[in-house]
Length: 492
Ligand code: NAD
Image 1 (cartoon, rainbow, N blue to C red):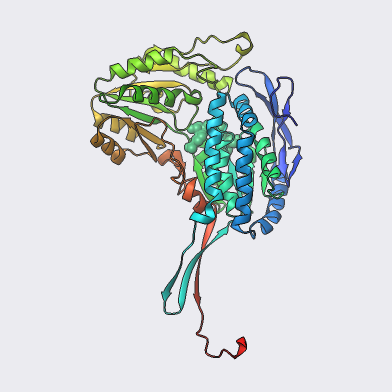
Image 2: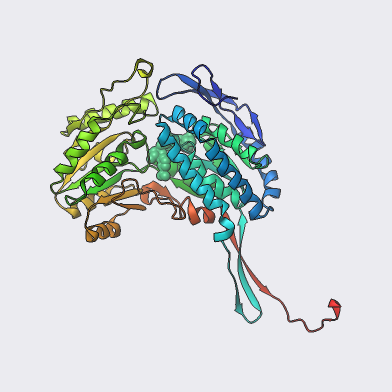
């Protein structure tokens, strides 16, 4: 199977069950390359019978896997980490082709996956459970145990990175896994499964079930799946959380976002303008960490002018990738129109894009900047998921904090300032799970876990780092009492 999208070859995105590729139940449609509009893969849906079969196989395989030592499992994770590095060119190209990212952006996502693998593969060194003498002759200890069969449902915008938030940790603690990739970007899942198999992961431990909402619902309902992690939009995250927990499952579901950057007039010019530009336009704005609202406090015009000048020079396909689907592009175009109609000033209009002929059917939108946006408008409050920056002019820092905190989402909030007291004030007051100080995309490095709050996350804990270890395992508390040896005759 060739994974490089030579435009002629259509990739069949099948299920991977028990180490074998099998045809799912129903063809759903084609994956269209966001750069060219050409069909590059077929996408499929799976129904409950197929899930039933996959869970049965995963359950059987987990019995041995769960008994392996951490060291044995760590060796497979370490091999797979090397495999990802060795295959990063073909992986980045596939990610890029199916979701429209620039190749370097695709590679950056893989690097985060590699970081999680490093964390997971070294678990035996940092997740040391304690054993203590708690009373005369009595010891207490924690023992970590796998849950059994678990599942992860992942979004279209990070076809490798988000699954790699989940898989290394869930597998390391001894679970088997059912992964449902996005139907919009299913191709990368083929590479990841083959990679794990090549690195010695036993058959049945990682299973891929292709599909959409219908498939997700059967995963939530299956009685032998113990835990469900989800990453995607907020309405879907909420509904998966409700459905999975109603079936008694452990669930952690990450949703959408509307992230703010507070810009202070004292901010360092280059650091702020480059950080803000990269935050809203990187991955064509299709990141849950993208800051799409700039809360400009006081006179920040010198910094905003610099952002505008730099944004106007962007070239589609070189400085910015494509938007994932035609429908997303149309939604973004109408959001711009609506915002202008509501009185926003269009400082940079990214809608008129020049690209070579072969890219003319792609989903292109250059960075777009709306200024003087009303704080209650659609553009300032809804997740747009594209390279659009809405600038809201704020009277003072408290006004900016009020806007940030009244928004129902809570993934990320950043501030650009040279003042430590302002940075500390924002850190204390902002109702977001991840805070950036002079950082536009405040993704924590491991072992600092990834996760928002409010409508950006349902369930307790974080998806990576120690949060991930806790989510994918049980901690058994063991209390032991041995009587003192009085007669040692049996030893001789
Ligand atoms: P999406 O919600 O459309 O799809 C995500 C996954 O859920 C897919 O696998 C899809 O098949 C499934 N799905 C879709 N609708 C469903 C429903 N009603 N019930 C059950 N399952 C459903 O999201 P997307 O367009 O693939 O990804 C973009 C969204 O994901 C954005 O909102 C973005 O902010 C969010 N996201 C969040 C994070 C985070 O860490 N919080 C990370 C990446 C993406």
